[in-house]
Image (cartoon, rainbow, N blue to C red):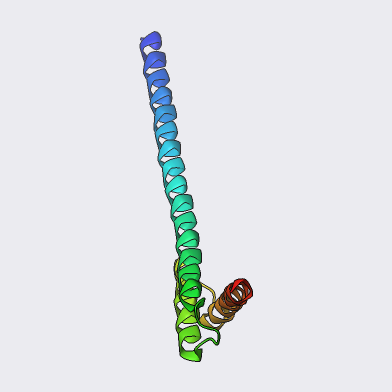
Length: 111
């Protein structure tokens, strides 16, 4: 009987190890998905700012309303990138303003 108890204990330990491995795999998959999602958001944010900047490339003088819309869209993507948690709308706006102005300056320099 002692051998039988020992075998049962060994089985339960093996089951626990398998469960831990399964949990670790699930966690790794979730982490990979989050990382991919963040990268996609960053690319989308940059792409949106680039698209908006390319629209203005033909303009010698930037329309203030167009610039404001570009900044608003970029600020939205910045907030989306962090999951709309934490941060502040003002900080997002200021960061977007810097990004958009850099893109606009670059576009005007190339024109």
